[in-house]
Length: 115
Image 1 (cartoon, rainbow, N blue to C red):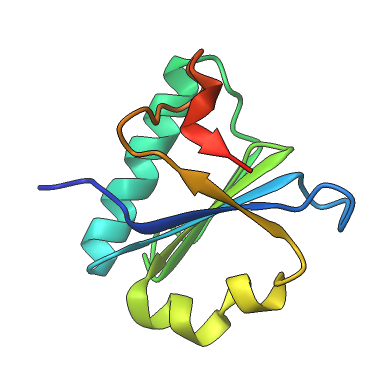
Image 2: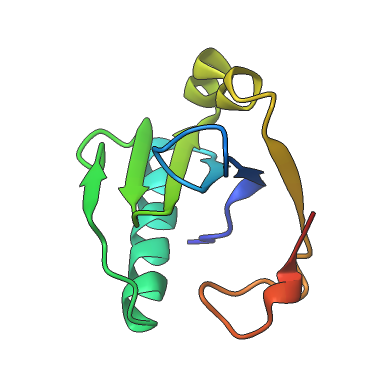
């Protein structure tokens, strides 16, 4: 199964909330895909020493939230993402460009994200 997330966005929330500095928002094509993407993200973060503080929604797969403290990852089923519209809710946040050729979870190449 292809684990690549659909339409990933990173919101820079620094100074807007104490919840997190960044929201990573992405989608999956189905609940199975959402679960696979969330599990892949958790494995990648864990493999790089990032501690998962909490995970919600994996049992259902419509919206999985992974809390890494300063970074919160939201993996949505497409319809659920459209319904909750977090990008609109946090429209004052800066959107960071994701260079998919350089992206890595916790990698040394910080150029994967651009302001």
